[in-house]
Structure formats: structure tokens, C-alpha cells
Image 1 (cartoon, rainbow, N blue to C red):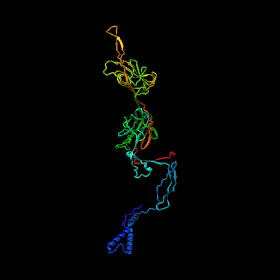
Image 2 (image 1 turned 180 degrees about the vertical axis):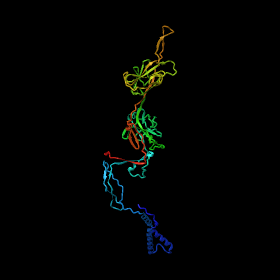
Image 3 (image 1 turned 60 degrees about the vertical axis):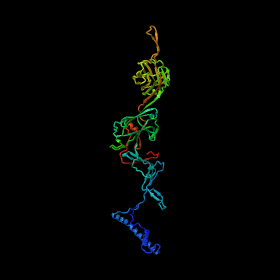
Image 4 (image 1 turned 30 degrees about the vertical axis):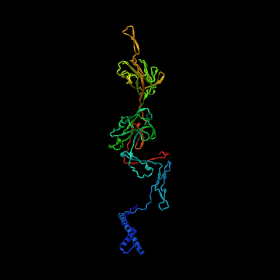
Length: 533
């Protein structure tokens, strides 16, 4: 496109004619615009002549510019053919590329006022590939920002796009899947143990993490009940309580139930501290990840109960040792669910109808009362502990606040690693039994010699005070052995990566920053389904 110098005099013939007529009207007495034809013709000739002089005058700057270019030794460019960008598209579904030979002609619509089409031809041979431009991503590594510029692929963008500027935070996410535990609605607590490598860097920069249940949309935030890893900076455990059942979702083509951990602090690729960012050199390196759970239920009613051989209904008030307890009497409690958990922590809550007052001095029950608690471990009755009237546990793994069934309280113990069901009075279940080891809950009525009347006996009333239980419920908690997650996937810099292989090699990076680089635009291509490379 050429640029002309501004005109020295912009007037045209009509402008000059108007000026002449105005001058004649002012300076020639009696002259009018409606004069004879000779006057009008003369005015027209002078106006046109003046226009021609002005046109020549206006060309003087261009003439002087050409003279200046000649002085510099420049010469005009020779004529060249018009050039246009052309797009060749492979037939949809084609798995092969197409070769476009040099000299291939393409016709454009005729120009304005023309009838023949404008024909262009390719200057050289090239290949139209079957790959499709699928994504455009802008990257700003210094600020850990990215931008999805896919809108440019759909067509022109009216206001344009700054293709070397990020517009959203670059996400760094660790996904963990464990179908068995995350599908268990009985989980009381979930524990995720992280072991860092020996050379995992110390975290001097502040970092913030957000744990979430992955729902396939935005994630449901959850807060750890404890975090001894200090935001994944040291080896430790992250624990969660009251987790609802986690829904199934697909992550990078892997279907499972997922928790995810998002790094909220942007990563700087530099070695110097940056305000509000964490240095890439301080990101954690994982050696191992293990998942365990605390499974538990509360308020369970035993499957069956016996006072010696007599069946007991624990849903209403009952006598665990019968109406006249004595040494050797046994109370059995059976529960497949609660007592069938190896190494489970068991709690039995007991509420009595007739607790012994704290200030009771009657001596009933006796001060030497002791109850022995045992559980069937598959080979015999294994001792859990012996509890006394004072509530003290004499050996074993049992604690007792109901003071040997003399107060409302709680019995707690841990089951052995080996358990098995057995039959008690014809009923198969997992069982614990409580046996009166010594002492008593009072004595039955008797006749004793009367010291005041030799040869006679006196009646001694019964002092029995058998425990009457108003309610008895069981609870359990069991910690499963740590197991590896079903899948561990990291999402960094807009791409997924499985960490299973890296964890097998005992060195995995859950969070990875962008490489140190200038702002850049990345283009991603896809191939037809029938083509693999």
C-alpha cells in the first residue's frame, strides 16, 4: 500500500469557479451570475485551468521524494505475483497423509468487476497430515499460570487472545484410589501413611494443601482430623474421620473411588524464595504410600447371651449371673460382628438398674469380688483380664469402669489376633465369657448356730445383691493393616501421570512444577483412531 504526501492545495475546479464568481460579484459593477454565456464559458475555462495547475503543484512532493530515492540509489521492485495463505484439509476419517504436488492450482472467486476466477498455485510440494490440532495451552512458568486457548481452534476470536499469558492457576493434584476401604460405609477413620525418601528436601517455604473427595466435578473439601506429615513435608499419617461412602469416578481412564490432595501454593521454578510460592526444589519425594482404616460400629446388640446355660434376653433387664450368683457362674456374650474382628478394640457399655451406692458399707458385694474375662481364640479361652470390685484390672488387656458389674460403666479390651467362632449352649458365634473368680454378690439365706441359745439355730436373711442389667450394648474399632492404594495418579502441568512405577522404584514426585522457561504456547495434536503413530 502506497502513502501519498498531503496535498499542497486541496481545491478543485468547482471550488475555483465559486471563488471567481464571488470575486466578480464584489468587484464588477452590475455583474450577475445570470450574465451572458460568454462570461460563463470564460469562468469555466479559467476554473479548469486552475485545477490543472494545482494538480501539478500537488505532485511536487512526490517528485521530490522520487528524486531523493534516486539520490540514495534505490530502484523500484519488479512486479510479483499475488500470494495468499491456503489451507488443505485431509478427508475426514482418513488414516493416511495426503501429498500436495508443487503447482497445484486453486481458484479464487473473481475480483470486483471481473468475470474470470483468480487462479493461485502452490510453489512447492508439501504433505497434508491426518493429525488434528486438538489443544492450545499457554504457559507462564514464572507465575505458575496456564491458559486453555482452545477457543482459537473453533474460529476467529473477536477481541483477540494474548497467547503468551496464563489466566488460571496451574493445578498440582495427587489422586489416591482404594476401592475396598473407600466403599466401606463402616469406616470410622481412614489413615493414609506417607513415607518420604531419605533425601526428600526440607520444607522451608510455606505450602498449603486441600484434601477432597473426588466427585468428578470440583471435589468435596474434607479436613484431616490429624496430619503428622505437616503438609506432606515429612513422613507421617494423614487421618480422616466420618468419611461417607466415596462415589466411583474415572481419573485418566482408571475407574475407582478417589481422594485427592491439591497443592494450593503455586510453584516457582527458581532457586530464590518467591513471595506466596514454593520452590520446586522443596517439593516432596515419596518412597511409599499405605492406606489403612479404623472400621467400627457402635450400639450393637449381642447376637446371643447366656447366664450359665440359661438364655438371656439382653433387650430388657436381665441378671447376667442369675438370681443367686456364686463362684464359677459364667455370663456368655456372643457377637459375630463385634467379637469377630482380630485385634479389634471392643467396648461394652453396661447400665445397671441397681448400682451399689458409693457410700455403701454393707459389704455386699464382697470386697474380694473378682471377675475373669476370656475370649475364644480358636484353641481355648484366652484371658483378657480380671477385674475387681474397685475396677482395677489384674493382668490382661482389659479396663473396667463398671467395677465388676456393681456400677453402670464401660468394659474395654483388645481382642487377640487369632479368633474363631465356637458353640456355646448350641449357638455358634464369637464369644467372650465372664466368670466369677472369687468373692460374691451377697449370700443366700441360711440357719446358723445361735451363740445365745446353745443347741438352737437362728435364721440369717439373704444378703444377695445380684447385678440387674438395664441395657448392654457393644462397640468395636479395628485398624486394618496398611495396604498399597489401587492407583496413585499425579496431575501436573495439564497432564496426568501414573505414579505406580515410580513408587515401585521408591521415588515418586506427587507435585511437579513447570520447567524454567519464557512464556510459551504449546500445540497438541491427535491422530485418527485407525492410526497409532
